[in-house]
Length: 373
Image (cartoon, rainbow, N blue to C red):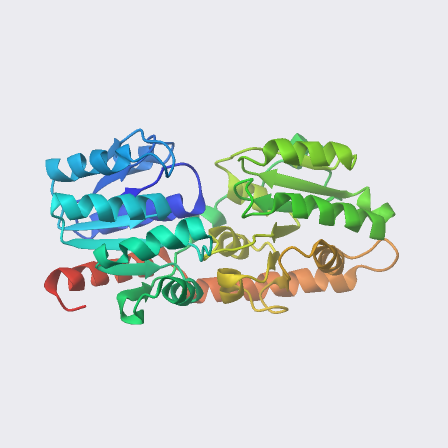
């Protein structure tokens, strides 16, 4: 199995779950990370899975092809399963020259950028099969790269319900929040895709709509990334330093979720956002942009609320509906949050488990090996 990096992200954590799950089902798993080993290498090694870091750079680092080829030749695999765009491209090129016959590529997001589409389209003939993280991602990727639908299988991620259910709520005092404050949570990489600047703009608009209620609202970001400096600048410009907190990456995300009022995901595109599934499992109401995989796991008004991506006014309006207003009774908002949380938890429990996810990967890989797919 190969991945671009083993940093703490949704796709990376899913990769680890699948690797460990396949090992328990009898597969001999070796992991290659194009970049550093990263913090997620440790759980893999504890499970008896070897992890090799190739110490390569970004997508332009062509050394990655030769290094992965060398790694594949040292220990020739029956199947190469890759995750994330750079590892997908490097893996299929290296596998060709290393003589690996079965190459399965994981498509985690519906990424329409030319920098992704062109390399994908040019190398698709070297892929045996694709696995998409959702049905919407499968359809979009087939359409934009002209891939035959029979070459694509959609397999949903799972949710670790035990870890979420046993998580202890995060102490609000660490971010100067009281029990009476409403906490708006954002979890994910501070990047263009996740649109953290839009959330700050919407939070500012929300404060103008309800200035009294604003005094008891906090916006909390868990994650790091290239937009952190721009985010800090915007927070200062909008004079929101006492209301917006950047916590960086944390290992206790479920605990933070349990201490929050609502989760916001304002992404421009998504595959199947783990953070939505985990929030729903934790009983945290979700507001998300109406894109790709978000629409697949949120029925607007039933298991969460949706808004048009990039529309900060609409996001502010949805948040006001969900949080209530200082100008009147908030019973309706509280009932809405409770109803969304209950319905979402039932939805996630009925469809998303790691056992089911791993079983589907196992079946697909064995079928590919035997020539049945």
